[in-house]
Structure formats: structure tokens, C-alpha cells
Picture 1 (tube, rainbow, N blue to C red):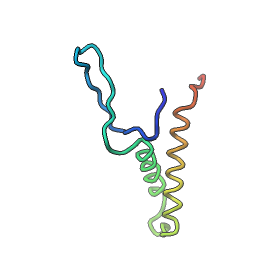
Picture 2 (tube, rainbow, N blue to C red):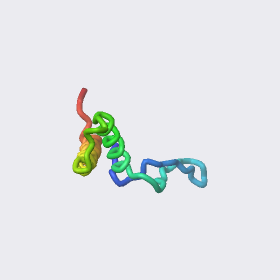
Picture 3 (cartoon, helix red, strand yellow):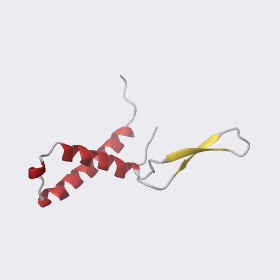
Picture 4 (cartoon, rainbow, N blue to C red):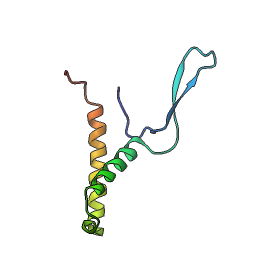
Length: 83
């Protein structure tokens, strides 16, 4: 299953009028890329001592978090590997 970084993390289903099928509807809100980057940033900051966090590092942390999000999306879209 492919995932798009700009898809919303808030998907829901809607039943067709004849009630024979369902389809996914994407809601507004965070994109998968934003969500994954936020989780990565949370992990990065959780491993740092508060005295180690300096304003000059904040940009680096956010850049790394977005790169991790992009790498995760790329890996999720890679062909299924044999196990």
C-alpha cells in the first residue's frame, strides 16, 4: 500500500448511497509528513538534556525531523521485501 506524505492522517470512511461499498475520505488537519516529523522531533528532543538545547540547534533538530519523516514515507513506499 502506498502512502502519500501530503495525505491527511485523519481519514474516515463513507458508505455509498446504495450501501454496497465504502470509500475513504481524507479530512483536513495534519499531513502524514507533518505528523511523522512531529513524532521524530519529539524523540530527538526527548533524548536531549534541556541545558543542551540552544537556539542554534533548534533549526538543525527540525531539519533532521523532517528528513526522518521523508525517509519513513520513502521506506513505506518501497517494494515489499521478502521476509
